Amino acid sequence: MKIFHSYPVAALLGLGLAGILPAATPSINITPFGSMADGRAVNLYSLVNASGARADITNYGAIIVRLFVPDRAGRFDDVVLGYNSLADYQRASPYFGAVVGRYGNRIAEGRFTLDGRTYPLVTNNAPGGIPCHLHGGTVGFDKVLWTAEPSLVDAAPALTLRYRSRDGEEGYPGNLDVTIRYQLGEDNSLSVEYRATTDQSTPVNLTQHSYFNLGGEGRGDILDHVLTLNASRFTPVNAGLIPTGELAPVAGTPFDFRQPRAIGERVDEPDEQLKFGGGYDHNFVLDRPEAGGLAHAATVFEPKSGRVLEVWTEEPGVQFYCGNFLNGSHVGKSGRAYARRYGLCLETQHFPNSPNQPSFPDTILRPGREYRTRTIFKFSAR
Image (tube, rainbow, N blue to C red):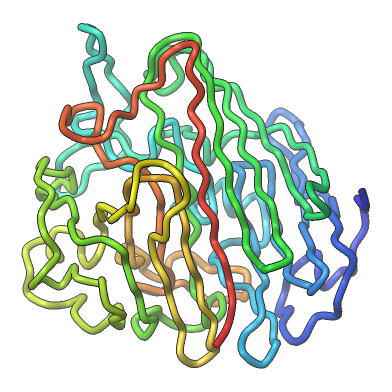
């Protein structure tokens, strides 16, 4: 196992790094990334494969800070939004690159009833003036320090992150022990495996919240990206972005991405659902050949660079969000402000508000059972 504690300065900072990177031996490079208010050290772990693709991940929030993949000419660019410093992530971040939980997405009114008991959660979001619980609360998994263990798995660089969410954290019952493993494959795939166990029944719905721009971080909006979603239904929402419980067909609507369509083609159509989200910010119900196992969820193609992102997952849904709430207030790694729709998210998940929707796939983890799911982001070019 090759794990180093040094790396070229330009690569460490990721400032303007682009071009054709030399081939490398698969490795993991560890550098300081700041410290928590209580003095605990935060690190950056650079997973590098033999072709030079690189994923920089910090144990603060399990955040993917940078992700360098090649275009059709072999040029490497960073394709995720984010910051160069821990302080920026701590100051203000719309979940750039983070793992979110215990419950990714929204829970209506910040409460749910389980086994006859109602649990109030932190309410930290209010779309349409309607309060809800979002992405685990005020201090969700995106804002905590995880323990980290780098390793090589089948000759591929990997990073295992662990966190114990204590009973009562953000209102959730039970102690939840969570493990995340990132692994960078030689085929330029980044796999994310989630595991969790609990000592008390609790909702669990973990997801990865990277904002992708396949043209390169900070280089304009994603409206020309061509999206395919393997979903013939979606979950419509009310004005508070909470699903109504309906599984509506996408046919004949701006939500039909079963065939490749540019994201900007219909995003501003006069549709009530688009109005509620300010654009796309909806859960799509994936068409799966069978329950469980990896299935194709989405493909994104960026015409200028030729980059392709394929998303494969074991989850039943994916939240497609096209960066509607970005407004230029976040200045990213390249020094450019992230304006509206400068990034897109494909958050593989169970459905929003499932604890309050008995007809939705179950999200309750019971003692003695293991939560386990996997998503793969695979990059190529054409």
